[in-house]
Length: 369
Ligand code: SF4
Image (cartoon, rainbow, N blue to C red; front, side):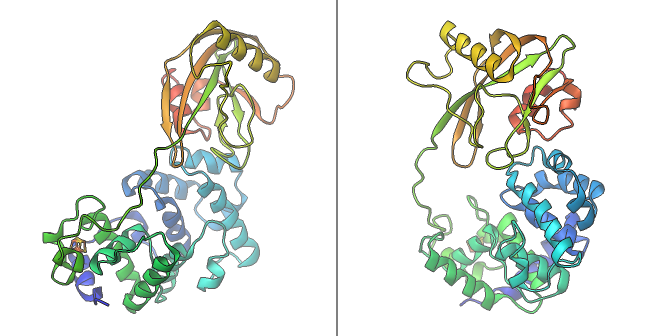
């Protein structure tokens, strides 16, 4: 085991990102919120969302009691919306089971929805001064390289070993050390371009000594992402309002407002095309299929006008290819499903929780924001 705490803390004192907004507090609520938002998301992307979220919902109680639509609207554009739904459920558990306080042990903290061991440890170390080790992506990369660990980082045995290592290396000042190792991973020991000459661990790092900094961590070969196809309906009524449909609470884009697809789905974006309907082609048969499917499902008298150019959106586990079907609706009375179907002026639609590609489509209509 290579002692890294001392040089890391010295480097952090001089070069760390002390001005990050969530580092100006020891209050568990904003610390926890930042940890959730930072999962799989870059610091610069998180900053405006973090600030706006805290201004609107500044405490556990406010988040627990907020309408889900409001929470999703504040999260809209940040992606990975399960985090937002779990965050609200976690706030409700904190209020109901922990008297409005973040739990003070690792065992209790990981019972909160969306809170894993590393997230819990980061909050406990910073808010309560506990000696708790973290193992987020940055810390994991630094440990793997400094100790030249060749094993698959996703393997259970490797993860157990990394946790043992992280726990042993974490000093009493876990708050400072955790921030230091996160910053080193984000600023120096980066995934693709590690800056070893600038690194405070260079003299003791095994990967650097072996000339293998770029080769670690080892990555398993990733197969290409599967593709899915869908059509979205951009239906305008005589007042210029757009029809949005609320997606199921769980699954892809859960709980967000979306342009209607031609068929409802159980949370996964459906593949509409089959043997008789070629993927995303603009043919009379496709247009007829879409017009009939939407008219029947939404009980609307609509006239399909045009199919827009194909667009793409990349999810973690698949790539979505889609086209937007522009349509005119003569009678905008939606017969039922009022809870899940609503007409919005484009500018109002943009204040709702929307998936990023849908927001882009509506912005291009001139909806503002
Ligand atoms: S010396 Fe290079 S590989 Fe080793 S921890 Fe520093 S940046 Fe990472």
